[in-house]
Image (tube, rainbow, N blue to C red):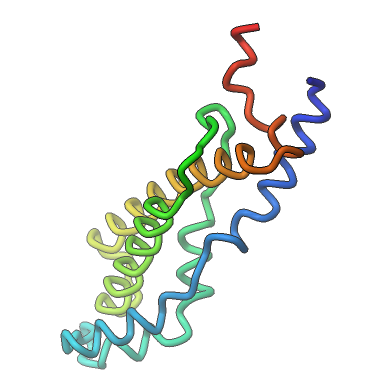
Length: 148
């Protein structure tokens, strides 16, 4: 396999990643804030900060994301568990950020770290699954390259 073939396959997978996995959780976050009667430090209903927060929260989570292929291996059983963990972490971040009045409190920073970690775990599973289930992209994963 040539490096150009591998890099081409990888770029196809990377280009589709965010659009394929990221979802708007701001509505769920607003509902949770409302059900829990969460308030910002200024006393405003936290759900107001959730509505329309998707682009900002997504930028926050993805700003330092850098896909790495070193740990990607073939994945045969899908990415449902990793997708759920990522979206739950993003939901938690959205709620905590709204309740903190959009301030980067230690709790918000911890939630951001968990969301970034979940995103990276999702990347590993998603990239591996894409390479596994799409013959044209199988060149992207090199888990057996050193064994040859």
